Amino acid sequence: MRETPQLYLRETDGQYRPAKHDDVIAAASTILETKLRNGQPISSLNDIRIFLASRLAGREAEVFSVVFLDNRHCVLEYEEMFYGTLNGCAVYPREVARRALQHNAAAVFFSHNHPAGSSLPSRADEVLTNRLKEALALVDVRVLDHIVIGDGEYVSFAERGLL
Image (cartoon, rainbow, N blue to C red; front, top):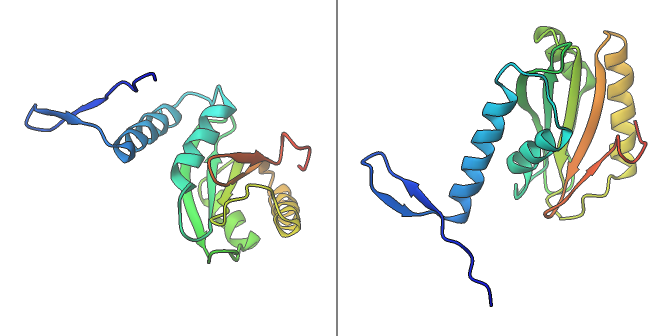
């Protein structure tokens, strides 16, 4: 059997300790967030998907988030906008459009988690995404993707042709 390499973290006092699983995920999330916020356009959709999965996977209730982007697809802001229950979350297109205008966003990524495990979008997810897309189109904000995060996997609306 092959042994997994041990990772170590340096504490503020300069001492090293073995890293825990959550430490590694938090560090990876921080690195991705820094990469996404460094003023460079998003070069890999996979980076933003991994970032969103690191933020939403394992949550006990549904969370709907939005990544607001400028016209060059640089990240302006990541916001967790709506919180729900184990199997649902109320999302208000008016509020999403309002925040997009406040950020002067040109495009957005939507994401939400399915705490029950399956990352397959529901019919309600599809209807909501279309309503959001229509509302944002009125103010010239493009919807680039809606990513549903499940147990260790994600589903992209764009890759499935649902946008």
